[in-house]
Each structure stands twice: as C-alpha cells, then as structure tokens.
Length: 363
Image 1 (tube, rainbow, N blue to C red):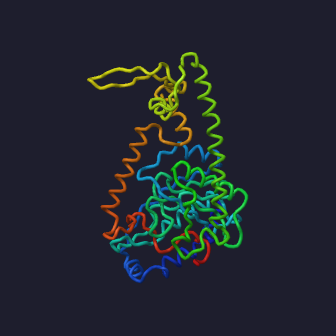
Image 2: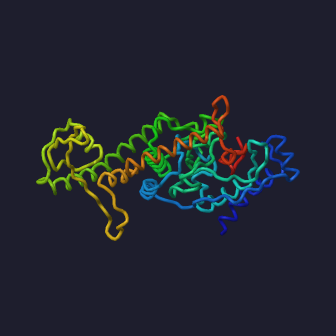
Image 3: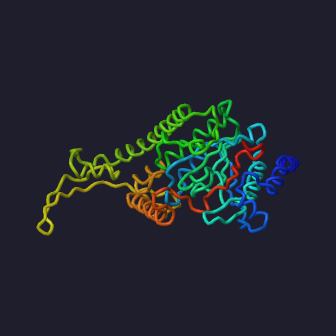
C-alpha cells in the first residue's frame, strides 16, 4: 500500500498541473476544457495479467484475433518508468489512471477525457504485462492506430540498449505476434517512424533488433516442426501396410499432401460421371480428439496448423480472409478520404499528450 501511495505522490502533482493548464493541447481544446464541455469516457478496461515467455507464447497461439487483422506492430519504450522504478501492478494501475485523465479531440472537434485503449503490452523485468486487449486495436502512435499493435519496453533506451529479461521477453513477444499474425518482421515499425520522438530509444535500431527476432522465429518454427513431423510419421507407420505407392507429381497426390492426408489407400481409378471422365483415388485421413473433450474433433492437418497458431482449416482461413476484406471495405467507406489517405476512427485517435513519459517531463 505504501508503494502505491508513493507512486501516486510521484506524479499526482503533474496530473493536477496538466488538468489545470494542459499546455500541449490546442487553444480550442483548452477553452472547451475550461468551459466543462468535455465528454467523459468510461474507465479504461485493461487485462492486467503478467506472463512469462512460455505462457505468453501459448496465450498468443490460442488467441482468436478480431478482423480486420493487424497489418503492423509498433515497438516503443516507456522512457519512464525505468526498470528501477517499475513496481509491477502498482505501476500498471497508475498508468491506467493517468490515461483516464487525458484530453483528446475527435474528428468532429469534440473534446474527450480519458483514453478508450492504450498500448497492448508492457515488457518489464518481472514479465510481460497485458494491458489493452491484444485482439483489438489500441493506441500508441498518433494517427496510426488502425490495424496495429503496440509493445512497450520498460526503460529509457536513448543511451543504452535493453538487456536481460526486458530484451529476451521483447524478442519473444515480437516473434510470436509476427508469426501468429503472418507479418514480416522486416517491416517492424518504431514509434519514431511517425513521430519526432526518439522512441523506442536512440540506441535501439532495426538493424539490431530485427535479426534477433528473426532468429527467435526460426527457432520457434524448428521446435514446432519436430513434434509435428514425429506425430505424422508415427501415424503413417501405423497404417503403412494399408497404403499404396504413389507418384508425387500427380494432381491428386499433390492435393492430398496440401490437405495433410496421410497417404493413398488405392491406386488411381478411372471412371465416368455424366459423360465426363474422372480419376478417383482414396486417401487416408486421421481425426484426433482430446480425451474427455469429445466436441474438439479435428484432423491431423488441423491439429498441426493449430499448433503453429495458423488457421484451423481452409474454410476457416477463407472466412478470416473474407472478414478482413469486409473490414477493409468498411474502413474505405467510413474512414478514408477521397485522396485515399488512411484515416483513424475517432475512438482510436490518440490525444495530443503522449502518455509514455508520464513520470517525467514531456520531451
């Protein structure tokens, strides 16, 4: 309790000063705020859990992201708090309270108090803290929050590089999110790409961090492929006496491999259907179901792709792609200008005051 009180004393003065004279806000916003014509947003909903790397990886593997899917991930640093001043849940709650006091304007010029979302993760010495819901957009870069996710490294990395648990967990978080969402790590975004800030720190460069994440992804894929290959080999050996040799270049065998079938049970069989010639071949399929979870039947191929965090079936993949296209079309109709410039929905527009350095002076 004493830690929380100390934390509040540390930045409550700034909160009072900013609410009274928000110097970084436009003059019109200050006038509206002074009149009291401010739309008060409901309290921000945060996750609040903290996870280690293995738990977080499993969490993301099983996460169903809401369409439209993210197209890029931003990396940030907090500047303050630093690892030395980080107090775990007390700090998380303090930042939540800070965000809920911030003023911002929507596209109609209306003034709001309180962010509706914030960054998604805070990578701290004691673990990966879940903040805003990873399934949905948050707020991290002014004007660039649509279809993005935001990761905060706890610390000031203008003069030195992140290391230890903060670095290891950041690499893992970036790796599993890029892998799960099918994003290219070479297109990782920094906050400073769209701002005059130094975030995620002058010392941090893409040439330094991207190879580390790429190596993590490669190792992740290698570990995942090994048990999957062993399971498929075991099942194939169980029915090898039932399988027949095949030509890997035929259309049916290629398609069977693409669908994850175990092997051919018959040779090709020519037949005619409604005056149209066909070639038919029977293939072995394997279905799996966890004991006592009889409603979770899936094919071997679905099991393998779910383990990698991919779509569970071609139909599921098609649905996800269709929903993404639908989301894009809706965004085009409602959010894009006549010139085709990307517009961020009102509820994702970050306020003028950036919260990431809330324990110190704004730079």
